[in-house]
Image (cartoon, rainbow, N blue to C red; front, top):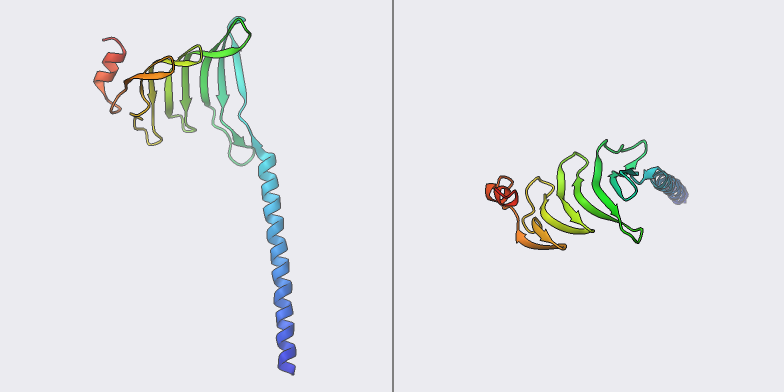
Length: 160
């Protein structure tokens, strides 16, 4: 009988320990999730106006305040024009970069549609040959470079 009582006491102790550990884990999960939700911040968008109908826009990277700071470079930068309707559309150079500053895409827009030479890069730095090329009215009409050092692509796209 004494062995049974000791066994029950140990079982009850294990249950109490399990409940306390479960409660502690729940508190940690709720606390860290709440902190992450409060700390997350979208990157600021800034506009530099050049007259009433032209502006240059920079979109900064998102960051976690106090945990992962945003880099000092813009994730996206582009030129916009205001249409007679008052709507702002991309028109001119566009660039997008990684947090480390490496290019991901670069080209030009005309009235919010890709136009001209566009180059896309993969995260490993290689050219994305499926997406890069010459664009007209947001459609790829001519293939782009096959490698990062494709001299024919450079000469053809620069008119030389």
